[in-house]
Image (tube, rainbow, N blue to C red; front, top):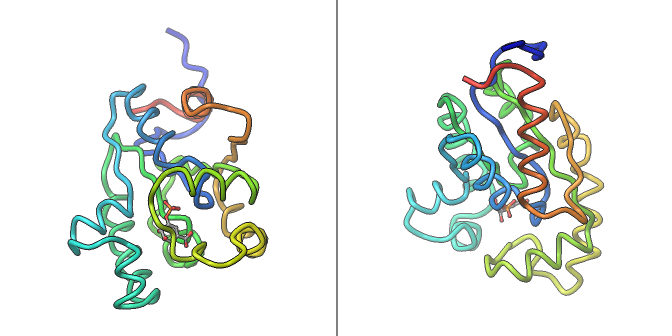
Length: 182
Ligand code: S3P
């Protein structure tokens, strides 16, 4: 079989992007396609602390949550054959990127503010940062300020107008072009 891939092996795929960009839905789908494990940073945090992310924000505060998120991310980024959904704010802390090595394909899932707010409202998980009077305006401001952090991803993929299966399929093709999946 010819090997068209140009780069080093891909051992894990990290999905980053704004709330509502579809990281968890696409991540599950992608992991299934590859026969890999899927992990979501927020879910692991909730399992560890025994309360919701929203409660951690309310009781211990955002800074405490960001430390937990950094810890969980560093741990998960050492595992192989895994698809990871980072929380939307994880890419903002520069030092978190030191755990992203050459064997990690990082992917930014694009979504606009309006669609992000619609998806978040529909998925039933409370997002403390969007629990404001004008969530779409807030999402626009946050998205603009986060853009440089999201741009650190190796590749970016548009999600609007595509279903999770289509996005997962596209990422799988990008990954296979980047290097052997092992
Ligand atoms: C956050 C995103 C959330 C969660 C927390 C903060 C953010 O995760 O970590 O509410 O700062 O963007 P999702 O991106 O999975 O919604």
